[in-house]
Length: 357
Ligand code: NAD
Ligand code: GLY
Image (cartoon, rainbow, N blue to C red):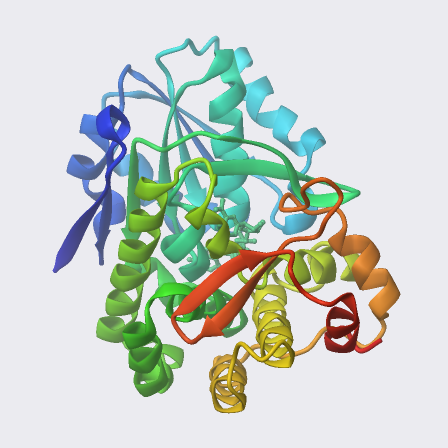
């Protein structure tokens, strides 16, 4: 059984297909490929598992494949060049299409290449991690890391379609599944208290990879994400709430060295830190802080930054954040479970206390 959602962006609206076995379904791709030239961008882990299925859906097209090394550490300008090399080497034109087959790293990189190649070509997201299926493949944020800051070079470029084949999660390592759950829990915390309750009840089933529970979590996450993106595509307001825990998390990821902490793990700890600060400010009750920590911990995620990152170092890293405006750090904080805000109105002493300083 499959579900189709839509991201409503006028003429640039696109479908999100969710279901088992969609990877090899030509009907999910063909209407969204403008020309005859297709480049599949994937990595050396995902290619042996799923490349053949995607290729089988693309009979009749001229298909090139770019297989990148696997890992956050390769989400760089140098590795991105390999995609341009392949596109130019094949003489692919402006009506060619990129297909991102993999997790968020591949989706962000292939999407950014599509945004830049000949000033923008079509692309399709085929996410194969839970994190990518619930978050990164939807909404058009694309980009790469810089040694001084995560996701600092990028562009908004919406895909033509998102094809989330839930059967690909069968091969996903448990640690990666937990990382994806961080972004799932995020939707409950920022705007969907009923979903948070559902997650509380169904977390064990999710960690055991129960297919019905996973499909429901992906559907509800994508519904939330699609609503936010449709309301605020370029993050002028509400979309910033999707960064709950990310300012803390990006500081942890950069400070620990890209790839040492998974993005979702850093977001899990970051959301606990945002909840802690919210509680110190008197906005979140002690009971809701405890519920937040418990759910994140039960998801198999860390609930604090690594001890070797001092408050000083974290503050320094947090200053390189896309939400910094006029030199003032703005954070996504919680007013309760299901309600979030972006604010720079907090006492720095409370922030220091949260950071352990
Ligand atoms: P990832 O892309 O590194 O994938 C995690 C690991 O799983 C990799 O080793 C990958 O090769 C492997 N893998 C992928 N699919 C698999 C499968 N089906 N079976 C077995 N192994 C599989 O990490 P991720 O968690 O998917 O994404 C994290 C990235 O996404 C970060 O770079 C983060 O910044 C970005 N992100 C972007 C957005 C956005 O809106 N664009 C949102 C959230 C996160
Ligand atoms: N993952 C944050 C966003 O898409 O806005």
